[in-house]
Length: 139
Image (cartoon, rainbow, N blue to C red):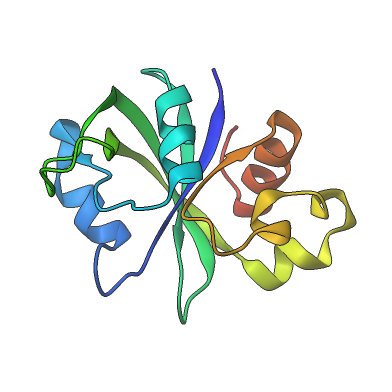
């Protein structure tokens, strides 16, 4: 299993929106960055990801699971763009803020710290465990 981080503006697609989709999940659509798209192409069913609220909140608020591998993004006719489907798994007991992530030296190499604008990014197994611990959830 691999780990990822999915960023979303809560006004556009929030953790609550994701939870409301239940087991059916939802496409992680609208990504128009080649590197983020390529990361989605690497994903497998069962991979886990942090759900990150960007903009004002800037915090990891939940965990999602990939339930469908990369396929054409239904929000465009352009064949270059693909997406995965994800479902909500668990809410973080304590959201983990970007400030808290940046303050932890163990997370200094995390993609979120080094390339904060990228909407889909990999997370190492060690980073996964550290953030889950901070959030009070089991990795």
